[in-house]
Image 1 (cartoon, rainbow, N blue to C red):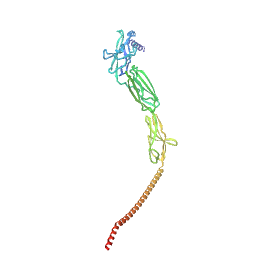
Image 2: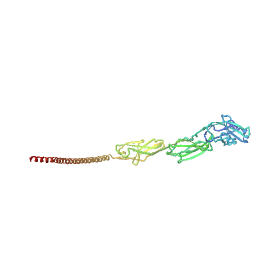
Image 3: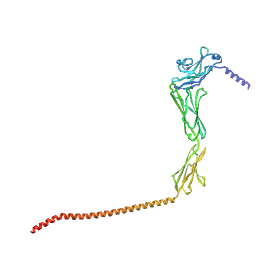
Image 4: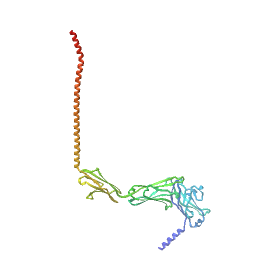
Length: 407
């Protein structure tokens, strides 16, 4: 055991003292067009160069790895001389080469490498072999929402939304579409790869009103220049589990039932998961007594069926009962009596109507006969008058002629 421990210690010390030229940076970074870009970067140098390095003024250069001599950024040059404007925000003396580019537009997709050198010396210069691939995109990446499972009613829910922050000076702002009775926490964090992430946590207590609610997290990126912005969204649907609630009963046809009539009682409720069993109870002697199972209860109504009914809905999380629903029974005798009364009234109205029609007919007939008689008498008088009027002058003339002839 001691030999293995001594061997391990020797190898560890040898590796620690034997430092090599090495650089660490994320292997791949996504740049958003118009937005500044942060490249996390750290390096190590061999131990024999440490003393020289501590006494020099180090500078850093980024270049396109696939094109020799294509330097795009040099920390020693002024802004007007730089191919891409930016700044090494890390402390090179602390071996931190983290760099920010003001913007990286289309056409800059490539693999980049870093060169370290000390100003005024030809000894400490090195092109690191490690590279970073930068990929350009016009639209921001969608924020990441933590996968959501099922939430129990009353459970505290914590939804996490994260979005990359390629520009540390202008990180994206995260907003939620739901803000009633909730808490929101936002913070800027650094991932294991050195890239920045903005995280927002939405907290609330799960209730049935949250069930099937669509939650949206929006990330808004501010561009450079001009202050314009771009937005990306992600959403998920919440699933809340709860016992049956809002139990409602109904009867078809509605209203009082008649003996021998078919009556259908229906029960409905709101539950997740769905109701597994419906039970019907009738109040007998002040105690609910089981009647039948099923969402629908069909009765051929008899006198024994009248009373108060209620329904119970149950799933794996619990159960709940409805309010009582009365089932009233109408007597068949009352119905027969009512029919007799209605029939009698209708018959009486029919007889009265017939009598009135007969009286009206006789009255009209009598008046018609009277008018015919009067008309007949008037016609006779007129004829006689006309007859006398037309004969009288001829008769008078005939008498005159007779008298003349006699003379």
